[in-house]
Image (tube, one colour):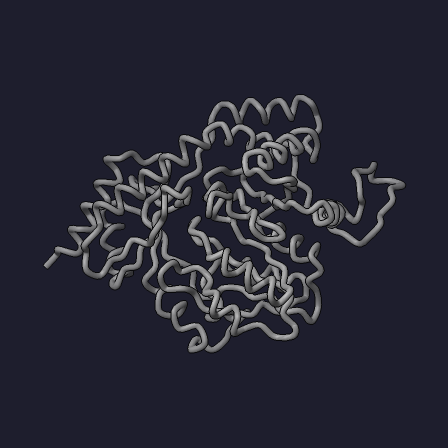
Amino acid sequence: MAMKYPWWQPEMGELEKKLILQVLAENYPNEGAYAKEFENMIAKKMKVKHAIAVTSGTAAMFLSLKALGVGHGDEVIVPDLTFVATANAADMCGATPVLVDIDPGTITIDPEAIEKAITSRTKAIMPVHVTGRPANMKRIAEIAKVHDLVIVEDAAEAFMSKYQGKCLGTFGDAGCFSFSPNKVITTGQGGMIVTNSDKVQARLRELKDQGRPARGTGGNDIHYSRGYNFKFTNLQAAMGLGQMECLDFRMNRLKRHFEIYQEGLSGLEGLRVLPFNLKDGELPLWTDVLVDDRNEMVDFLLRHDIDCRKFWLPIHSQRAYQADGNIVPCSSRYSPQALWLPSAFTLKDEDILFVSEKIKEFFNRG
């Protein structure tokens, strides 16, 4: 049942409907001119040379690793506290995801843990920009250079968030984005890879389209390599093009949510609002907090028609990747405390103020 104060909800407008109807009228719903226009728009917006649209953020990460030569016998360093798709993408390549701990200040991957995990089989690092908060890309890039490793950024939650003046996703060899319904723009499902490498871009386009270097007929085409089918569609692209028209409003709304929460919840013992440097261009997709009594607070908020979302369980605790939690103590400690507060861009200032007051009421309950 929908809550009055939703954690998140996608929003579509008349422009998306108009563009989708145009695609249907032109009778070419497959990947075509609209998809290309969407790729070009993203590349221009992010100031990157290439953008390659694919079916999902998970596909984006898998294809990026594959294009960069990751395969059987290799190891890929992944933070333990992230959505399981990050590890799954490495597994899809036949590589082993190696789980490492997080920095307790940012809950992004800890560079020191990366260094300790490197072996002769390590091929790649996959930093995750949690909620749009940058991982320490300066230090990660230094580590990758010393050990000759590739970097694939999981920027699924970080579209248009910046670090040191550049968009996240543009620091590594490839950056991967998701356009699922709980992102700042959505195409239903869908993803995007960005890269400044001509070679990586060419390989990605082969891999996503059955090994063809260029679009063919589906008949007597030349297939230079093995590949897959991860093509985008004009229908998805039409939706994305329409969504981009609202991007600035949505970004400003998300920043405003964070500002109100940060001010309203400061000083509460037992709750910490995780940081964002808005002046440097960091974009909070959602506002996240660490709460000592998280589950009790969630129950309290739900009783007041306020929705929220608990953080992922650590990957090491999932049966598919089960491992000793003692090797990732920060991830094990903070996952049960972490929570995303209502952050839908449909919420107004007064809504966020109401939620903040209810949270304070919870902490002052006696």
